[in-house]
Every structure is written in structure tokens, then in C-alpha cells.
Length: 549
Image (cartoon, rainbow, N blue to C red; front, top):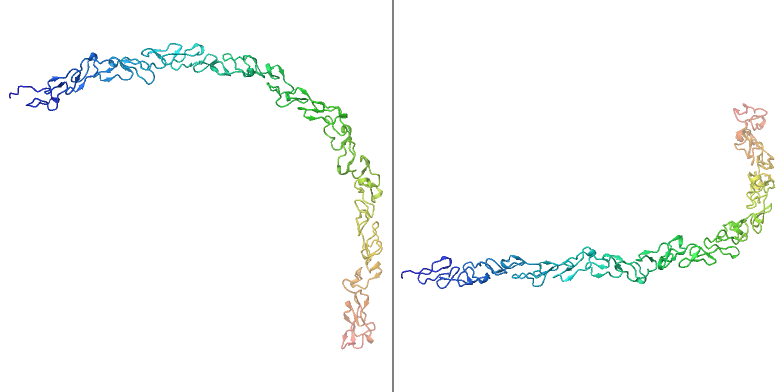
């Protein structure tokens, strides 16, 4: 072999087999055949010509190596024309922009037409034309409503951004206002048309008259104060404190002024009644006359009641016509009968008579003047209420009523003096204080003066004994408080010392007196001198005693 044949177009420029000429890995792009020497058939390209060409314009073949086209058919992208135009583009080279297709759809990538029609607000074959004024929506087939002042609606959704003509409802402005509303955008509520009829949706006027309590062409103005009812032709009654009546019914919200009654306060009170809503009953007007329907005042009252209304009884302490008479003095301060002035439980102490206005006669006091006065000082009259003697009692009687003698032990004016020492604790005379007899040691008549010194006992008739140092004896018992004078002994110091004794308490023994004579009981001296052998003033000095017995 001479190796005179060339290898074909092997893949990756590899050498072909030297004997057969075949390429070990197949053909390079753009070639085919056993020896890789045959160009790709038109319409194919790539390694071994296994790839199909894209959508080249006019069915022209693509580049056998790269697969690129000189130009694509409409709807395909360069360079291979195998990829459709991106969404939103179409046509030759995908250089045309789609129109406004219906939401969720894209235009045809060859023709640019929208398969499901246009998006709202657009029309035309390609959906590139805005809706004309007065139309809106998909393919602009919807007619706009009546926008305010003739403004165009939104071409997309048909809404009127500036609101509707009066009488139409937003947002589309194609429907009349709902019953009860009217005007621009139906924002205004109808007035009170009679029978609840709806007002004119454009003007708001009521087709008939107004409901009770309202006035005006639109029936949106309440009746003026003081009027009510259909067309506000009826005048309010006499409402309490000038309040405005209900403008529909005429009823007064807080009732009627004094003197009027009825739902609308347009009727006067019936006889015998008065005041707010005529709820108060007239008082006891004289002879059953009617009271003033407003104030309740009477021209005159029956006895026992006060002007002006004759409702209140006379104040306590007064009675009779006009309550002009003062009550008398009723027992325990009880009010008298307000008609005739009589005291229901009798008179207070010190008064008498049917009206308890007469004081007790002199010398009497107390309830029904039944008690006699006591012994007042100087014969004065006692207090006619209490019986007390203002200037005190006559001597011998006790305050305050001067009806009881002084208590035992007292006498005189006001029983202020204490009795003396009457015998056996007997009471003294309550007037003079004199005792019938005195207790020992005291002198009649009042037994307040003690016996004079030297006397004692009943009537001070007993003479005291010989008390030491000349002291007076006890004026009751006659005893000497500090003992007897020298030469005396005994309870009353009236007994001389026993024979041969002398001195204080008779405690000294006599000396040896001559002839055994007794000594002087006071001094102890011997009246005839001393016995032989004795000497001294009291014969008590010597060699032996005169007496031993």
C-alpha cells in the first residue's frame, strides 16, 4: 500500500485508522459517513450530523458545524432558532413587544396576538390601544357609569375616582342610591319623609309631606321649639319649666307645668288638685273651696291649717282660723288641738280652764290646781306650778314646798338651826328651838348653853365636888378630870379623906398628933400638936410613931 488516501474530518482532529480510514471516535461537527468525508445533509448539523437544525428563516439550512441560522422564523431566538421568544416578545428576532394581554396569558410569539383577549383597559388585535373615553375593562367592551361632573371612569376597573353624579352609588356609579340615601356618592341620609317613603335619590326631596316632627323640602329639619306634629303646625302644651315638647307626639318629657295635666300638658287641673302634673291634692280651703291650680294657695283655710296652701297644720303652739291663736299651757308640753285649742291630756301644772290659760287661784298649785300651798315665809303665795315658796318657808318648815316640819334636830327659818341638847335626844320646838328638858350639863330653854363652872347634871342643879387646882368638874357627870383636890376622894371628890389620911388622893398618912387626934385632911397638920416624942409640922419626926395601927 502507498498510503495515498487522506483521512476524513475525524472528531477532535484525531487520525483515522491507517488501514480502513475510519475515525476512531466518529466525525467532527458538520461531517458524516464511514470516513467522515461527507458534509451534513441540509437540516442537520453537529458531530456525525446528529443534530437537527432550528427554525431558520425560509427553511434555509443552518451552519452544519454550529447549527446557527442566518435568520430565524418569527417567534424564535437567534442564533440557533431553537428557543421560542421570551414571554412578552414575539416576531422576527423576537424584537417586538407584546401588547396588554389578559392577565395570566402571553401573546402569540409568532403573530403577537393575545389568545384570550386584552387586559382590562385595552383593545385591538394586538391589545395595544387604550379604551376610548366612556369604556373600560377587558377589550373595552364595558360602558362607564355616570362619574361626577362627566369625568371618565378608570379604564381598568370602571370605577369613578372622583365620585358619582348625585343619586348614583360608588364606585361604579351605575346603580341608584339605596333607599334612604341620596346625593353625591349616596353619602347623605334622607330626611323623615311621611310613611317612611324614600326621598328623591338626586335631590333628597320627599315626594309627599314630612313625617311628624319634621319640616323643609327634605324633611331634615326638626320642628322649631314649641311646635310638633305633621308639618309642625301644632303648638306644644305647658311643659315643665318651659321644656320643649316631643316634636313628634307633643308629649312633655319631664311632665307638665304646675296647673296642667294630660299627655301634652294642654288640660287644666281638675277641681281639688294642683301643681306639677296636677298630682297634688288641694289643702283644707275654707268651706271646701278649690285651691289655685298652679300654686295650691287657698283664699282662706279651715281652722287648724296654715296659709297659703292650707296643707300644713298650725305649728305646735297655735290653733284656730289662720293659726292666729296661741295654745294654752297643756300638760307635758303637748300641743293643743289645732282646731279648737283644747288640751288633749289636760292642763300643765299651775293652769286651769278649758283652754288651760287661767293660772291657779292664790294658795293652790299643780295639776288641776288641786294642791294647797305650804307655809311660805310671811304668808307669801307659793309658785302655782311647783308649789315652791320663792322667799323660803316660815320658821319650822322645810323647803321647797314648806309643808313638812323641820326634820328632827333642826328648827327655825329654813330649818337651818340645829337643836340643842334636849333630854333623851328629843326634838326641839321646830319654830323656837326650845327643849322640854335638857340633857345633863345644859341649861334651858334651848339646851345649847353648858352649866356654869361649879355646877353639873340635870338642870345644872348639882354642885361640883373638890377638883384638883380648883378645876371645874365634868358638867354632865360631875367627875373631876384630873382628880380631887387635897383632902378629898371619891368619884365626885365630895368625900373627905378617911381618918388619919390626908393630901392629894388621900395618899398621905397623918403624923403622931396629940391625944391620937386625926390630922388635917388637906395639910396633914395636927390641930392640937404632936404626941410626946414627936415633932415637925405634921408630927412625923421623932423616935417613934404615935400610931402603929
